[in-house]
Length: 155
Image (cartoon, rainbow, N blue to C red; front, side):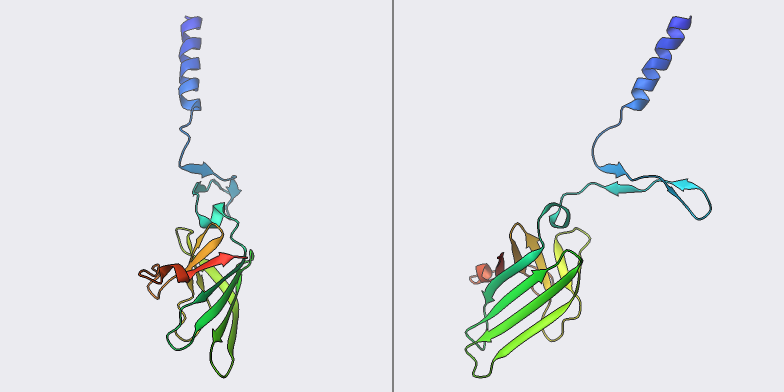
């Protein structure tokens, strides 16, 4: 009788002790303000924000309807800050602009949006391996013949 009870306990311990690996991970236990313990479950997700070395400076000369092109430098900093510098080529008066501020990631961790820009700049970029894509005002990749000219390469 003791052997069968031990066998039942061992099998049930084994069954409950095995967890399915996969989609969530449990963070450390926290004490709430009402002195109760709670555990936070976070999704395990590979995305641009968590998996890439995205901090750095990116450059491209973007197409321009009224000039020869727009030299564009985007610097993403690991603290959530950006620098966005443009230089309009071929104009008699130099039109260099510099914007700085904070950026935020979208919920999927693939796109960034700049806060503090003004004018007609969407300030949205899709982040990839050593490159970022300038996105339109709706947050979509530019398509068509000039699509490759909207990719900024990491320097």
